[in-house]
Image 1 (cartoon, helix red, strand yellow):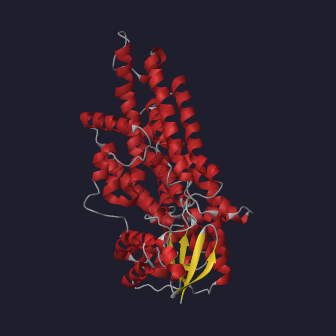
Image 2 (cartoon, one colour):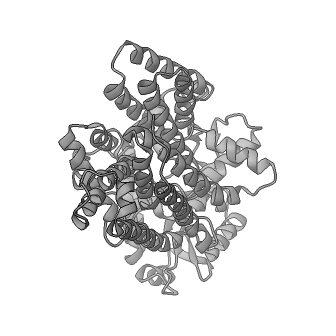
Image 3 (cartoon, rainbow, N blue to C red):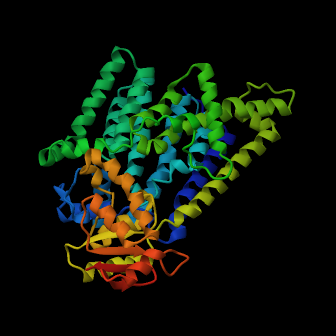
Length: 517
């Protein structure tokens, strides 16, 4: 039985929750808008509502007949709240950071179980709450599904750990319920949940009872999620599922991020990563390999979303490194009467140096996370861009095909490219969202080609035409997003204004649109 946290531990847990909530809501508060992505999810929630909450066969997003195969739990939650009178845009704006905040509590429960200590779980929670990778992709508009997914992943993992170590029947039910929630929230997180629970069984449940309980959980998850996957298979067969499974970014160098600990996205000194590395070495010396293996498995199973998942064991390792190595030894170095093996909360009570170190970690990581938030808050669709997209919706043919040029090389962090099909209700030929259900093995080559298209931003229209020809895509319009520090967009804009093959049809402070003759 885990001991109740001491007053010092409770105080640190309070500040971890408070600061964690602050850094998760600050980007949305600062921007006054919805962060980054979410356009496809906005349309899918509206599709679900229009279909009376029955799963549609396709989503209207981008007019590509994208199968409505995405796990729908978060869309149902958003749709129900929207039906009560809340704007769907406000749901995508505020619900993701709120769910991400609740994930801190779920992480505390999980880390305390894995470390078999609430006091160590407190330090791990400090690391998790402040690590940018623990929230960056969960507080965006598209984080609606990701945030629900990681919340259920944490709850499923804590339930599975308790099921194999405490052997109480209620944990079978909880692991089933939360495992189903993860699978119904996000496809990649559902996969990571299954693999993590398998690792927990491998390290903690390799006996007859463990096999029985794991089998019951797996069957229960399949049954609870069957209304969704049976419907998808009946409507589309296995093609979209197999297509999505092939878009995980698999390469032969997946292990490099694990080996170099280069995925926490910290600013300034990578303090939490260093503490995680110390915890990693402590566990390796103890021959307790679960957390290192979990971190590696995230990259081996599905590299594209692995950094966000690997942040969980990294934060636990950081808490372990603090509790079992850094703080006790600081106490020992600063007081001859203290043993280096002393409990960290006792060390904090009796050592001023330990208090200073904890305070430094809290506020240093807070400032680093807030600095990270400053950049995140800039990843929004400008108001002028929204006006341009609304003009497109009202003044262009419904079957018009667009090329969207923003100069942003990474399409998953480009608000204009994802929101264009949602706001303009026209087809964007270079929007990547949704194509994971269509392109299969061609997804990664298409994704890799998009940076070449955005490079045309500083070249000429021939560059755009060459890209569309090589990808066998037609287009009628070019939409250029203006740069923040420039009323123009470089040589391409100049060339299009002079070209006999293009006609300027719209311009404001945010965008320029040319029709192709």
